[in-house]
Amino acid sequence: MKAVDEIFLAGGCLWGVQEFVRHLPGVLATEAGRANGVSASLNGPFDGYAECVRVTFDPAHVSVVQLIAYLFEIIDPYSLNQQGPDIGPQYRTGVYSRDPAHLEAAGQFIEAREDASKIALEIAPLTHYLKSAPEHQDRLSRCPDDSCHLPRELLHKYRNTQ
Image (cartoon, rainbow, N blue to C red; front, side, top):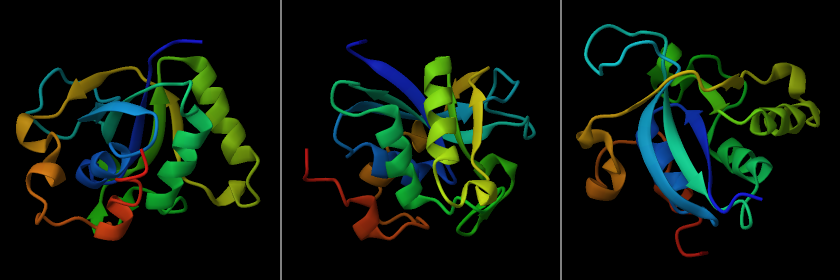
């Protein structure tokens, strides 16, 4: 088993996703970014990306399935291209990885659910990743009064459980 692994989780606006995920048991680091766009630049028109969080984690302490279950605590899994007030394909939900085993685990997680046919979560290989601008990194940690569609108590549900 790898000592450190990574997966890319999309759940709408990345500010809230990063703040929630950073406090999960077994998560070592997070980084705000864009998954599966085509541009090498943050400037310019929408290029197909999903706002995401790069999650570096210890697989001995948290599994891919557990990370996806945590993600389901903060997303509306039935909503296509919208989470809370954020609308557009960049706010779609998704799980992206360079490791096919992660994608297989995500697929099995969905298939095991009774509501699998209703779930709009995208599961896809990570083809391109671009780190977001510095002002988006750890945004809600640095600016806790900024708006977020997730309630504060949910954002920090796991803050002191590590």
